Image 1: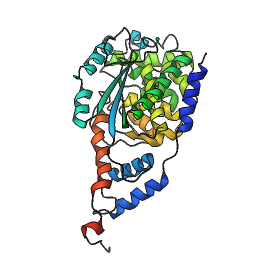
Image 2: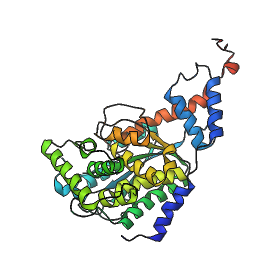
Image 3: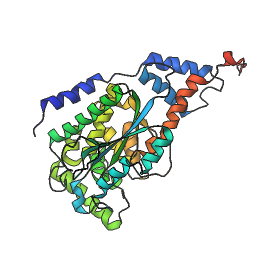
Image 4: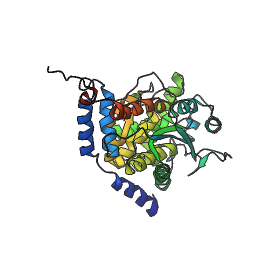
Length: 358
C-alpha cells in the first residue's frame, strides 16, 4: 500500500510535538481550588476539569478560550449495503444547512459563542459555497464490504488535513476545539473501527445509527463482519484500520485531535463517531488522550465502550444521538465555568471567611 512520505512525516511530527501535561500548573490550580470559598472538592468534575485545563494551558487560571466546532463531512460507499435509514444525498444537503445556519449545531454554537467550521473532506458531488472549507481527498469512500474504504495514502492525507486545520485555527487564536461530523452511513465504519481497535464483538459495537429497523441492523452487522474478514485490518495500526474500514471524516477528526494536542489545545469530543476518531488518534499518539474532554454519553450503542477504551467519563447524559458536534457544544459552558471558578471565586483569605477546623 503506497504512502506519501511528506504526509507520513506530518503525522509523525505532530505526534512528537504532543507533550505531557504541565504538572506544576496543575498543582498550582489544585492548590488554589482548595483555597476558594467552598468545601474542598465540592465542585466535583468542574474542579477536575479546571486542573486538567491548567495542565494543558500551562497556567493555573486561564481565561475561557475562543471556541470552534469543526464539522467534517464525507460520504460512505458502504451505504450500498442498505445500512442507513437516509439516502446518501442528505450528506451534501446537510452541509448546506450547516452553512446556512439552520442545523442544531448552528443553534447551539450561537448559544455558546462558538464558530462552526464545516469541511468537505469527502462529500460526493461538488458543493459551491465560499463558506465551505474544501479539502476533499476523494468523493466518498469505497464500499468497505467489497474493497478497502480507501488507500493508506488517502487515509494519511485526511489525517494530515485535520492536523493542518488545527494549526490554522490555533493561529487564529482558537483555544478550544470540538469535533463534529456529517456523513450518512458513518456509524457503520465507526462501529467497524471500534470492533477492531477494542476487540469488541460486532454485536456490542453496532447500533441503529439514524434509526434503521431490525432488517437494516442485520445488514449493517453483516456488512461490518464481511469487511473485517475481507480486509483483516491491523488492530495495532490505527491508520491501517482507518484505511480499510474507516471514513474520511473519521481520519480528518483523528488528525484534528493530533494537531490540537500538538498546539496544546483541548478538544471536546462529541458522540460515538467523534469518540472512535479520537480513539484512533490516541492509538497513533497516546499522549493525545490528556487533551480530550468527553462531552456526553450518546445513545448510540458502542459509545460507552469507546469512552472506556479512552479512559474518559462523559460530563453529560442527555439521551442524545444526533452528532454534528451537538453534545460537545453543550459542554462548552462547563469548560467556561471551570475556568471562571479559578479566576473569579474569592479565597477564604480574600473574603474574610473562616476556615473550618474539622
